[in-house]
Image 1 (cartoon, rainbow, N blue to C red):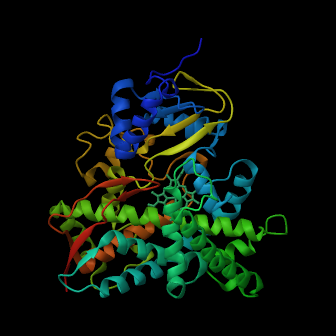
Image 2: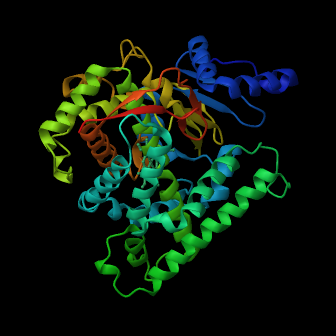
Image 3: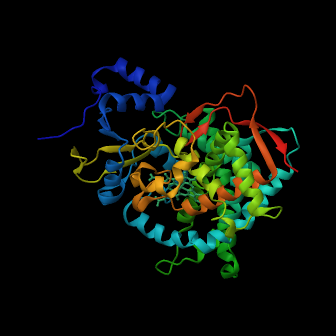
Length: 448
Ligand code: HEM
């Protein structure tokens, strides 16, 4: 007997409902899915044309999908979002599956080991200092944009040992193009002469020029062992003796480049917003930074001592997980939480809703860094918190991002106090990542 979770009637039976569905999802996908969980429970089934969609928020299901039965699932490669990601990032780590993924992950992992991450700490802090030094007392800055530029600069240094200042236009243009491309309606093929499609293709071509130029320069270099950037590590990471192809290197680099800055930027922006609404906790972050760092620059070794800043970021990523939903496709028939999921079906793990579930987080909308004290963490199911995903496909940049975000937040707190500009409308924009729709306009008060 087939055990299928409860859920809405299939959309294909009524075309008018399809239009309403697309509209509702576009307007407020988080609210829409939340309402369905309320109606149907922790897992619901929502057939969508040819796609058999299972949607879950429960930590037990998530553990099975990502971990204990993780080998029965692959990254979803069909559907608009996956296709668009593939257009830009090719077969990089985020999109690849099977043997290719396994081989590439093994090659890339060492570049994210603790010692290597720590070696980038000074670059993170000095880039933050340069940004803050450019802010005047009383100035209003769009913190969302500032964090995006900062994390972009940092990831470029880490990946390429390269400050993209000279190529800022190509890099920033490609980032915008990437977002444009992801916003392209599902049914339009790439050759349609829409200005947005043309613009994004041009910008991506420019970005490719920059990235291929850097790859070729490294492949000619004779001093790779002495260099500390990830590209050098990848070029010298010989797999079967021949290394990665130029195209595979390009896909991996663009993947790390894109995945490695936008998410960290959002984590910081949302945390700064939450702290601006909770001045007691904002002061506590500043007090911690002042007492640990005094007037000197933060270092990698300070990471454990800046623990309150870390807890605020953990809570920020709970309330606003930058990667708020992830998707898998069943590679074979599988049973999850007592339900039968057939081969080829898609499973959506709605991280946002897991993070806002009152069963794991009483008063879930309240910002409370104490939820991250060790006793509180131990009392919750492990998979009730997954800003970096879980199982074998856990974010490769997790420790880098945690180090970077903590050092940036503490360095900011050491020098400035940020307050939301009165009347600024804060709205969630869940597209590829969970962005603030209208940016985050904040007033700077210099502390010294
Ligand atoms: C706060 C910052 C970050 C967040 C919230 C985040 C979140 C995530 C999540 C949820 C996944 C899993 C996706 C899935 O299971 O489908 C993931 C994977 C990935 N992330 Fe991150 N990430 C962050 C920072 C970074 C950084 C700094 C890098 C690289 C420099 C990075 C590179 C990647 C890559 C390459 C993958 C794919 C890993 C694989 O499938 O083997 N991320 N990230």
